[in-house]
Image (tube, rainbow, N blue to C red; front, side, top):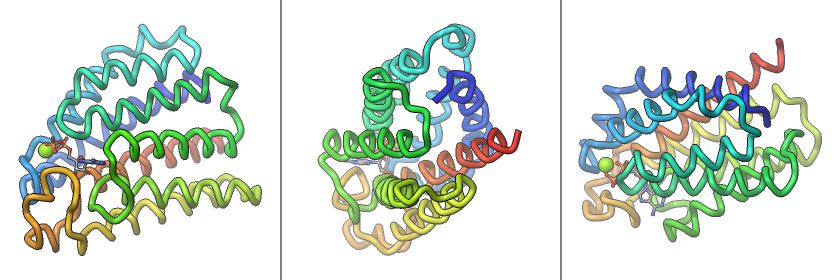
Length: 212
Ligand code: ADP
Ligand code: MG
């Protein structure tokens, strides 16, 4: 993973989050407290402002600083979980360079595992994990058979979309939506949708970098 790619991803994700304001706000208003968009926007703005400070650093330090900063800026239930993701990516990167797609996939899987532990949640609970777990599974199974990068990115995008959509019919057992019981049915989970948007954005960027 290169620092330059992480910086490009910050800009792209910020744009994508800002473009999804209306949708993310209304999803969290329906089954949460309406702040998910604002939480993410604040996190993205903070990272954007850190770009110059991050640019000269090795990727492990960049990921670590991102994680620490997000822990104190995003807030809500999602803040510590997203921060945990980056801190675990940093730890894996520090232990050995993450450069091949298979290595990135292993780091991603470890980081999703860390979110599961931190939030004591698993697939099927109507959270961001319903996007992230299928992505981790698809990512590892395709890199294990040395699939072409474009095929890997396309399959990840599909898995993320299916996972996100699958939250619509679920009852939530974690997070604020758990208080709603059956009333949460029929609504997509905001964290599942934002994770899918972010994953879509980063895999599109990865495709462009690969073509360049
Ligand atoms: P809050 O719920 O505190 O208002 P946000 O609105 O920023 O925080 O984030 C809500 C999202 O966090 C939910 O849509 C869900 O995807 C995710 N979430 C909440 N609790 C958990 C958990 N224990 N594990 C994984 N994701 C969770
Ligand atoms: Mg909320």
